[in-house]
Image (cartoon, rainbow, N blue to C red; front, top):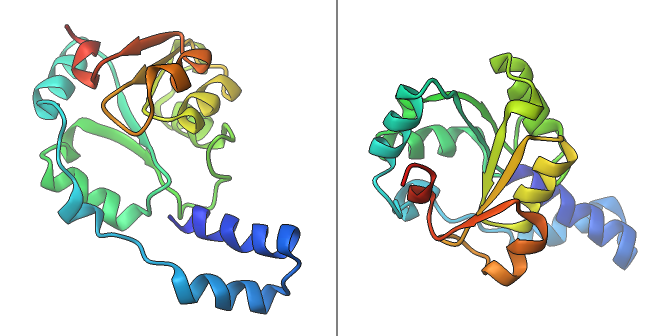
Length: 167
């Protein structure tokens, strides 16, 4: 979320014309981040999904706009921490989605070429990030925030849920 917060400040400076101090103050006054640990509810049997993917030799990484500490806590709560080989988070300092840096960093960390990488996402920024990183396949999932109509122009494949990755 740190990246999104920075973006909000930048928009207020560049588009609205506020000074940096005024933009920071305005964002600080209204910015509230829900606790992702308490609001996280799996939409599929994610431990089974991740276990199956890993059993097939796939490495699992997470690229998120959320900050690292709540992401790590959420993965632990959902029983997924041991399945995830690498994380790129919003407060790591890389440019935020849809810029490709998060995916490229994960690919370097895991020694996996982008062309042999699958980007799975529930919004256009995820899929654009995958395309910008030149991943081999972008998969839009409908179990998140976007509809098929919105995702289809940006995805190589649309699935109803992430469970479709192994079905």
